[in-house]
Length: 285
Ligand code: HPA
Image 1: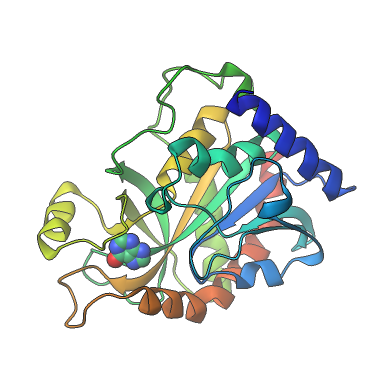
Image 2 (image 1 turned 180 degrees about the horizontal axis):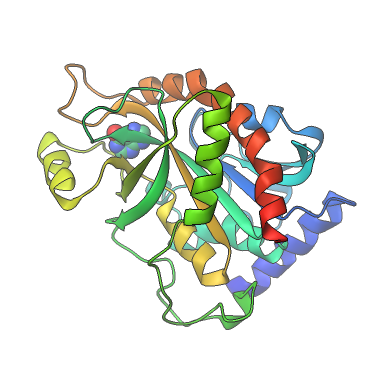
């Protein structure tokens, strides 16, 4: 079977569990950011392990389940946990869940992550909307034959397609407005993706800053690329869990990243609860 057929099977299985839910928006949660899943009302929970062909996460802090239900009055599907390239998964496996979301009819994909802050002035725990990305992961998940059947909207599913607005300006403005109402400022940044799992060296961070990156992390970019291939709109939100290598006196640890996520996850949940209905409303306009 092809990956496309696996995606179709997985989507059919998830759809059968969703009952009357018809989510147009999906949220993927990064390290330590699980509280959003707890904010979902009347949840239908499906462990990744039950979904045919779905990859299972191996990282602590990524529990690996689908939580679908109501957030801010609209249907949402939340992926609590994701799989990463550094775990040994292929680019196809890393992007499989995003493909399934597209096949489910999701139109707006919110990708959250934990990231190291490169730009001066970032504080730990700050949320930053992605304005763009730099892909230094070492691969593009679309390498291989093009599969036009992944298209969710007319005109998508192309071999070559535009990435000038990989992260939707429209969704970013809605997110910034919602953040302001929640009482905080949602800045903008450029996310540079590396494969990991080792954190960066200080020299790499200096190089990345020169390249124009303000954030560094090990996820999100492959999902953004397949989402844009399918025609979904993407909102990226990074949580600055640490200052990038060489910018603080202490060595980096996963524990630090995870704990900083835990401190901000409720703020993120508040933001997404306010934002989800606005995004859905804007899709119909
Ligand atoms: N580097 C890479 N990935 C990360 C970091 C970092 O400093 N923090 C959280 N994810």
